[in-house]
Amino acid sequence: LAKTTQPISMDSYEGQEVNITCSHNNIATNDYITWYQQFPSQGPRFIIQGYKTKVTNEVASLFIPADRKSSTLSLPRVSLSDTAVYYCLVVDNQGGKLIFGQGTELSVKP
Amino acid sequence: NAGVTQTPKFQVLKTGQSMTLQCAQDMNHEYMSWYRQDPGMGLRLIHYSVGAGITDQGEVPNGYNVSRSTTEDFPLRLLSAAPSQTSVYFCASSYSTFEKETQYFGPGTRLLVL
Image: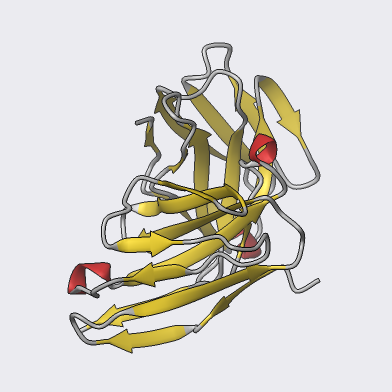
């Protein structure tokens, strides 16, 4: 199965840019890499997805190198409300199963 | 649209009991899946379905059964509950297999097995 690695936790201050990297191998070559945000006692929520290079939406950017062995979620100017757990999601290259990372707990301080 | 709904929100079982976790979506999504979430282990795929009548195993299927008789519903059955199945269970749906990475999650069911 595909394997993913994310930092367990990160700390930041309001207004800073935060970058969270997920390393992944054995992922499908033609499927998206996706990131989710999860608040306590809620289900995960879609943030952004990409295939290669850089994707930006209203809340985040996603950087994916050409070899697709990692992806970096970038949150510009974080606020206290960005305190959450962030997960990367990849597709396994054998059978196409969805594999989540272990999650990165981001704590934003004032 | 209600999105993805799950019942119950919380359940306590004794070892050996069986139960069914309900999941329903009103978005006409083809792809549905069940995950369990344990501290430090992220979300692990239990079973998934690419359409009515079609199901397949995920990463951790042992001890769980699923069926998909309609597009809307995807129940997860615990055959004989064990303490190791204490977890938070999430159901999710996607528009299609080709967009399976874009998942809409339910609010979760907290299960405690004594």
